[in-house]
Length: 74
Image: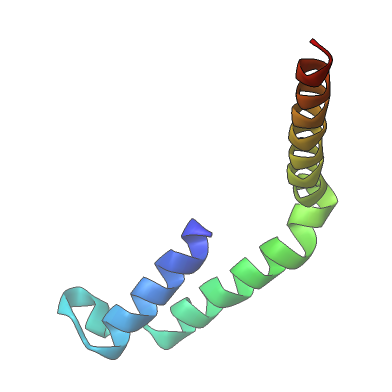
């Protein structure tokens, strides 16, 4: 997500011609968009980062249910 925010900020700075960003090529910004797309669509899945986040969330929910159930029995 920080990568997307950086790209959007760079695009806005380039569009409004702020300071040295006015000289930045649109190809650089487009390249960063392509890099972000490739990261989120392919590399993250290959590394298993998308599943890791989901598994952590499921473990947290399961632990909360178990704790809630055990607290009821006491």
